[in-house]
Each structure stands twice: as structure tokens, then as C-alpha cells.
Amino acid sequence: MSPPPPQQPLSNLHDNLVVGLPSLPDLVLTALSVCLLFTSSASKSHTITATRCPFLSFPPNPRRFLKIPAMSHSATSSPSPSTPSLFLLPRRHNFASPQSLSDWLRPRLPSDSFASWGIKPGTKNVHNLWLELAEGETSLADSTPPIRTVQVVTVRVAGKHGKFLVESHQELSDGNVRKRGRPLSEKMKPNEDPESAAVRAIREELGSVIIGGGEGREGGVIEVEDIVRIDPNSYEMRVEEKVSDSYPGLPGCYVLHTVCATVEGLPEGDFCTYEVDEYGESEEKNLADKAVSVKKHYWTWVSAESIKP
Image (tube, rainbow, N blue to C red; front, top):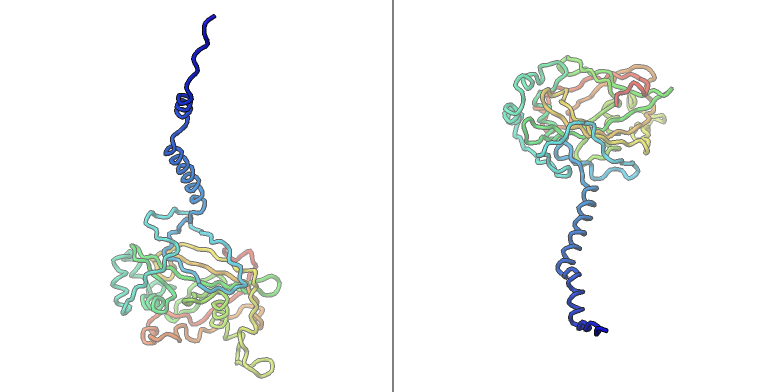
């Protein structure tokens, strides 16, 4: 009988076991790789898809009762690689005069389109755009062509029999008529929330018919806030990208804040209202006189299905 094999020393057993296991640095690198993999996957799910509309900035203090949903974009084209962050504030351009604005725009826009501003029926001129910039209602991206970003409140005024108020057309100060076919809309002022902008829009564009002579039911002055009811559950917000109708050739980014409201005292049939002075509060009165302004608004009642989204 052969003698049993000699027993392996304990130290050799330990060495053999250690050879089959990864070293400590390898374990650390593996753990870090796993952590980075999960971190990368999680971050992709929270990536914000930017729009071509530059420098979007929304009213910082919307009324608390308004339900603000997630933003949706109506544009189907993919954003360019140079699109800035969605939450950057606009870089304001300080144009000393409409002429300096015109000089800045001319090389950045198609010459035939720019030449039609204020000439083509229904369009506005450089003085209008300068006033919008001066009053903070509009911002321009420093690009070619520039992109005009404007915040707009749209008020869907509900009437009887399920009808809604739509502005059919406008009569302008230059004698031309501009077709509209949309609910009451107004550019928002800086730091203005949608509810305040809606009430102001109703006062400015419908005030001549709902306030009338200014006498209330008991002889007091009618306050627009007392006869306007805004549906707190109706708030919607979306972004549209299209070339401006008012400024041909100028791409526009429209941030639309929509609310539904009822207004007491409106006529049940078609009617028109007067714009007292569209730029009456402007400090640049001499320049405002050269801008194209709205003199009359013409309104009609239509079914909800006929209103364009």
C-alpha cells in the first residue's frame, strides 16, 4: 500500500484561494462602474428637450389657483444643436431708437419681407416692434434671422348656448383691415400673471361696451374685476413657432397662456369695440404716433368646435 499524499501547507491553501478572487482595486473599479451605469440611466430619464424658442421665461408669480400643466410644443422640427438652455433669461437689446433697430434687423431678415413691414395690409412697422421691446413685451434672439419671443394671454370668453367670443377682424389706424378669427388675445407685460393679464385684456378690448358710460347698477363705477369670472381649472399653456403675420419674415415663438372666462354685460349678437389708445401708457408718445395701432375690434359668437387650437 502506497503512503498517503503529503498534506498541503495551510499557507499554500490560502495562496490558491486568493488567486481565484479579484483583487481589492478590481472590486472598487467594478462597484464604481455599476454606480456610473445606474447614474447615467437615471439622468437620461430627466433630460429636458429644448425647443427652438430661445430664452423662455415664464411669469414668476402665477396665481396659485391656476393649474399649470406640463409644457407642450406644437413644433415638429428638431431643435438645432446651438439651441440655448430653456431656462436662460433673455439678453435684452437696448436699441436707442427705431432706426437703430431697423439697422440691426436689415441684414438679418429677407430684404423683401422686411420692406413690407407697415406697407403690406395688416402688418406692423419697426416702431411697433421697438415699442414692444422698450416695454418688455417682446425679446429678440441675437441670431439670423432673429427669433421674436412673446408671451400671450388668450381668453376664451363663454356666452350663452355654448358659444364663445371670437374677434373676426380689426380696423387699424392706417385704414387697413386685419383678419383675426381668434379669441381675445393680448401680449403680457413683464412679471404679469395670466389672470391679471386676462382681466387687463378684457378691460382694454371689451371695456367700451361692458363699461359703457361708467355707471354701475347703483350709480357707482363698474369695475371690470367685478363682472369677470375666470374658471380656475381652465388654465392651459403651450408654445407655437411660426413666422409672424405682423412682421413678415420674422420667426416668432409664442408662449400662449389660455384661460376661460365669463363676462357680464356683453351683447348677444355681433358687436364692435373701440381701442381708446393702444399705446396710451407709452412714455415714447411721439414714436407711438408713428406705429400702426388698432382702432376698432369686431366680435362674433361661434361654436367651440370652430375655434382654432
